[in-house]
View 1 (cartoon, rainbow, N blue to C red):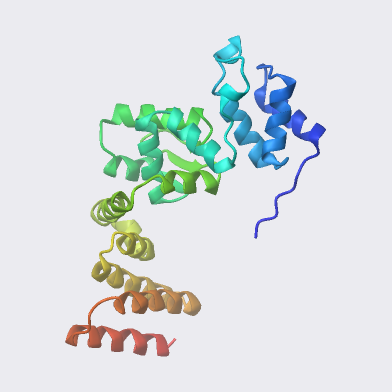
View 2 (cartoon, one colour):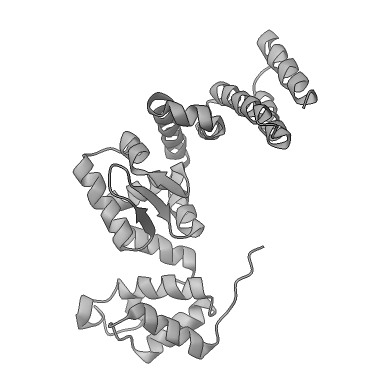
Length: 257
């Protein structure tokens, strides 16, 4: 379990004001932020940003009532609210990036995202400006990283189950069709996305390739792990002569490691 250090009330207040910068928050708002987050620095930072986004620029809050600010009760609610406030386009880009992973490239994102390049870059810029995502480099060579794994988790959690499957299928097919060097280097990535897309047969093939590649590097434990994932996937399918052949092949290959 991740241990999260906690700040005392005065330390939390200092952090809130540091994040707020030149935007002066009322003392009671500062106190409520620290109280609601239990002084956990990560929570304090994210919740402060959520409150600031409810403020009217440099002119103070949109409402003078503290209750009207609707401070999220949890970090998850805070991050989800921030995603929603960025608009549907930015949220969909975040969801797609979250399905790819904690880190995702513009090149892969643009291969599966809808809309124009200009629209995609606009929504990415909104995510970067919000500091939910960090950017390295410039499109089309840019790479993006979610600021926290929690941000990725929240974005991914907002996808419906059916949408997740379709998205993972699009990611796998884009990697398979457009990035052959990544397929050769990381077949386990394809295996993962095809598993999430419920395309089990294709996933098994890539688990086997991942196992073979690891074995060639003498990374035997990794090879066994990939082959085991392939065997577990195989066992979700109905038995047949082909099932028997693949089952025997995976077991004999694992036994030689």
